[in-house]
Amino acid sequence: MTVKLGVPSKGRLMEKTFDWFGARGIELRRTGSEREYSGAVRGVDGVQLVLLSASEIPRELAAGRIHLGVTGSDLVREKLPNWDMHVTELEPMGFGHADLILAVPRCWVDVDTVSDLDSAAAAFRAEHGFRLRIATKYHRLVREFLKHEGVADYQLVDSQGATEGTVKNLTAEAIADITSTGETLRANHLKILSDGVIHKSQATLFQASNVTWTGAEKKILNQLTDMVAAPVS
Image (cartoon, rainbow, N blue to C red):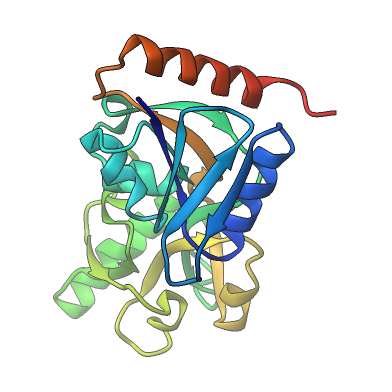
């Protein structure tokens, strides 16, 4: 039997994941061409490398089609309702840091907090006859956050592209998006609300909960988790 480990299939997240495992004595490598999603594992027997997009990994973990997976903690929380019933966080990996934040136009000088946004949203609806629009691709996380904060007069506008540009293009009044440096927000004349950090994300190693483990698979899992949890010299 084998333990299936899903990792991002391309880009810096894949490279950083390979480096992270390599520093712990587990070599991950791509086999074949860039278009072939196949790979190999050395350093621990019985582990199969599965290359997937980072956004697919939460779904594959929840379905039990992979045993372990590396993806952003934001993606797991966004894509899986009651995520902690489907997966367990094994190890935060210390890279891929990004914050999911709420941002508004910098010219909104009276809007600095989520409470201010609530007041502005109510005033916006009274003046314009429709709810203030927040552009995002993180509907679940944003909706849960705003519900917890008591914000009601808003609507979420789906944005799968350049979310920061939606305010300038007049398709939204505010945004909720991932940022690491804030440079793109500043370039688009947006500011983060002082209490508007919804989730601080990073790459994380997750274990699927909806898997029936054989004795052999448990031994492989224990060996792998012991290796990744050991201090790196």
